[in-house]
Amino acid sequence: MEVIDLSHTIHDKIQIYPGDPLPSIKRGLTHEKDYCHVDVLTLGSHTGTHIDAPFHFLEGGKKIDEIPVRKFVGNGVLVDVSGKSDRELIEPDDVEPYRTKINTGDFVIFKTGRDKFFGTSKYYLHPYMSAECARLLLNMGVILVGIDAMNIDPTYQKVTDLEAPVKDLPDENEYGYPVHDILLGNDILIVENLSNLDEISQIKGIYSFLPLKLKGSDGSPIRAVFMGT
Ligand SMILES: [Zn+2]
Image (cartoon, protein in one colour):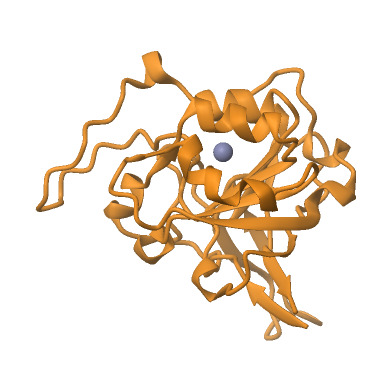
């Protein structure tokens, strides 16, 4: 079986969503002073490659430890949207060519190719999904949506150090996070900051997005993998 690692490495300087808590990995016990080595981790629940539970956006939504484990491992269809420009919308038309391959209960994974900009300001300029596309996935019975970008909605970060002009950001208060609202509002899980989707040569395969079983949490970093034949 072919197993492909789809996670970014977590470290103190990893790029995080603007405003999220800074992660740190510190030495707790060390070989020098103690009987073994143990690290102390401080992490936001959305550090690196991670999964969002409905509670992330909905006060009464399901928390990460309340979701059955079978929802995190399943058949996925890889949708290639790597031709999109900065901040371009992912639309229902992008899903259309894959429609017959997507079954009820499947995951749908969007490959933007933006993981190659991870750690740079250009990573904020990723394409993002339209509300219409989120509704289409909901109507198709998809149970998880993944993307190799910082956010499935826009990332509200002004980027000033680029040479080429980029499309303006929508107003955060006006535009909000419609895709998170639609998907999480219908118990559809979201995986963000995937990487290495380029290494997957099959349109269909098994994906595993297992979170830590954190009591009452809105999400968790994950070790995302693709399993193909
Ligand atoms: Zn999210």
